[in-house]
Image (cartoon, rainbow over all chains, first blue to last red; front, side, top):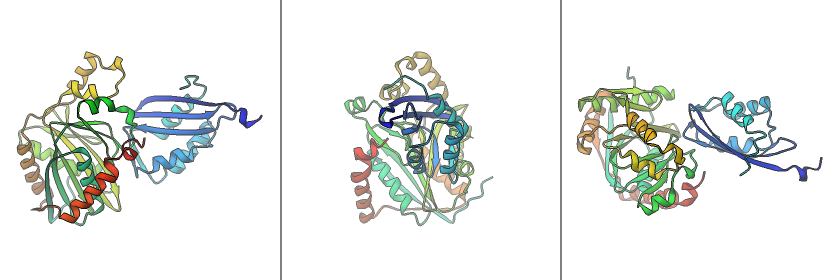
Length: 103
Length: 243
């Protein structure tokens, strides 16, 4: 497959996971690799800057349950967060795969 | 059971100011904390503060501009808050429970006891709220930097739910009478004056933490640092629109 033909799909999702979590994701349709992701909402993460690190480190990760879970766990391992759980965050991201509501 | 105690707390009363200034002073105190400080303040014009992680699209920015309402991004997480008829406080300390829930609970005890002094049956509602008769009257948020904790929060004196909704980008189908009624049933003002709450809060801080209160003012140099923070960060679109 020619990667230049790997179309980038962009979708958004708003879910209440304890707190509201809004995700905007762009991923490559064929390879299912995350191109970019933005996670916003009224949750709490300490230290706060970890969320930007998470967004950066998720780029290039495959939309696959274990890959996502392992990466999120690794980045958040020294953080405390309220308003979502890692498993539910992974489920939301995976649920966006195949979403054709391109924006 | 309150475990944190202080010998003294410095009291900073900064009056009513613009949103970006209020957030600048809180950040300045966080990064320059030598002794615990309780700051009490208000808003010279209405302001919506959004949480650190929120998208700016949560707010109808144009409508806020049209209605002369400031918009500022906080350094703390949590949701959008419409600051209008309220007393706002911030508390900074290097001595605090490391457990986040515990720290919210212990610091919020000052608010609970203050409200009890005003005849209200206030209770802590985890993670970060204080409720009276089942309704939220106070929301709080924390951040921690350089082993210093900042907790700031609002004690609602009166609430205008319709105005708040009109300034937020809530999907139109959710701005129903039922939704507004639902929020009215969950959030309430305490119908006390700013001065009543301010006095109760100071008295409660003395009781809860077993400490002396020492009023102080920011020096000219400190005010200039806050001004710089306001100009370069909290008034800037780079910060406000960063997410």
